[in-house]
Amino acid sequence: MDRSSRNRLTDRLLGQFPGESLFDRIARSVCRAGCLPRKELYEAWEVARRVRRRFRGGRVVDLACGHGLLASILLLLDDSSPLAVAVDRRLPTSAMRLAAVMEENWPRLKGRLQLLEADIETLPLTSDDLVVSVHACGGVTDLVLERALSVGARVALLPCCHDLKDRNLGGLEGWLDGPLAMDVLRAGRLREAGYRVTTQQIPCDITPKNRLLLAEPEEKREDTNYGCQTETN
Image: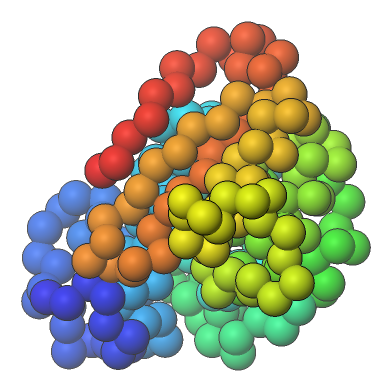
């Protein structure tokens, strides 16, 4: 199966996910909802499981959320998070359908996922939140980063669509391609703000824009005693 396909998962593909693993059960739910590209299922899953290896608990805030699948998976992987808020300026009309199917299959999600259509800069955040975003285009990734930094929240980003126009790359463009230089500077900004940074990659057969940036304030890491190592798979 081509995991990078943008074709929608539908009932016709239920047989591709016959197992009882959590992933297969989520995949069957997505197939029944019939609204999500295959690529987005795999992206959300690969990001969510890496995030939960590092960060537990707290309200999940999924900014530029699309269908909000990432937020649902993060709740399934860690029941100690009481709530997830999935925010986008314009939610897909099918986002509610996907959420309903997920709640039907996992009743413990009921009332814990809020889909909110709003500008992502308007949602109040706290330092206990876990702020996540997958493929927020261009400068939206920087806005998500700014929102997390403003309150000292943990953050996990999978950037994409790097807009290099008029961008100061700190002189790194002589060694690194533009998008990589931009992500290196993002990691540096977090370190300068007192964050411990972890860099990873999700599998490149899902997306070539696969660099995952995770960070938490040093004092929060000491309080929770999470172990963090750099991974590539």
